[in-house]
Length: 222
Image 1 (tube, helix red, strand yellow):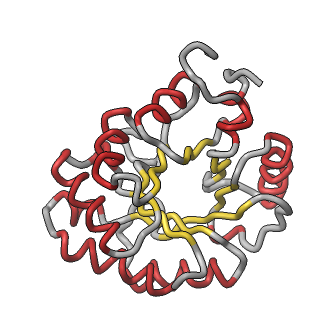
Image 2 (tube, rainbow, N blue to C red):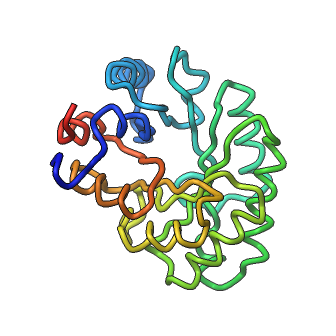
């Protein structure tokens, strides 16, 4: 693994959002997530907004909005994001209306992202989940451009819940090329091995969303 991935375990850990978004998650599960996150040295945890507030000393707290379908009214997404930030979230991962993007209704996608951006202001980092596996390349590029125009901080591949699939090297390369380092790129969805993580980082991912963080990190040299 060390030959194919120059990053070591701690460097990769610093790129991870340790994630628990299962519908059946309990407060005890979130407590365990926080403990594991601190043990692993990851950058952040990501939990459902209903689990906030979360006490996680030394770990950034992230949450989601409009998750997982993106088919929520923009004002609902904005209100959800604003409440989450009021309850301590420092980062919000919002899901776009994927159907609007697929249909080429990019003005609606822009308005959706702007609504959430304005709802949280500069109080939180905003990541835009584009569900890349469900979109053609042309739409991926356009949504990334729109996310930048709307003031997002990151574009993100996937929720991990869509049947079309999760992160891919191709999508990450395309997203990274489009945003050109001006925004971060988060790869998320189906990343279960160190090799997969290393390939996505090499493709341009600057953050990883993982639910199997320990398994992935165990594949990197210390």
